[in-house]
Length: 307
Image (cartoon, rainbow, N blue to C red; front, side, top):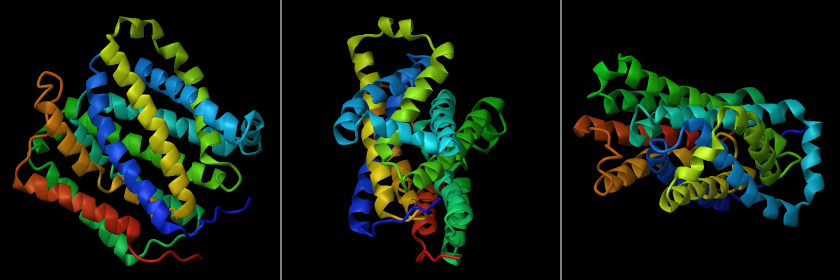
């Protein structure tokens, strides 16, 4: 199987990645609200269903239905993609019951580091000294960010929520690495469509679709919006990976903690009963900045070379 080769159009790839970061910085706030109205499995099922319906016409026009059959040539990679993204949805949204959107986005910054490790093992990309420094800075940033929460981290509720985010990062990294290799022969829209449809069937036994009928129009609108933003962000991200190396695609999550915290504080002024922003002091803010810097340094640190 041939390794995926990027196009080298890094400016386009970076713009698409930054656009994705803006969406991913908004989604946690929307999901934090939704998980208080809708059970997690049902919400994940609905997001996958709506996302699949929105993506189907684009897939049909650009590639035709026969393109879906091509995934049969890479069943194990497809299985990793399905389990990775489906698992990411469920664990990440479950964590939002216990932690704030800002805290979740800080911890999810481990995901690009997991992608880097995957890039080393799968694509032969070297983890250079700048990237090791990036990982160190990221860890220090996390320690500073949670300086007001050390006692809470030892509790089963908050600490369990943080562990769920770590698991979500592992699922996400697994999905990204498998999808990137599949893009050697398949466009990201095809891979995503198969993931969406498969996840609907996987989650159906655990979901309660009829519960969605009790939602107000506004609440249902947020469910549809979260699915639509998901489609746009992942298609954008998938295309960006065609233009950027695996070790650089993690830039899309570098700025999301700051974007998410800003959105959370803004939303908390209007939705005081639904969102409580993460308590911050000077060290916490410094930690958030270091997390962003460490993630960016880790994913962009130096040129990529092949073994």
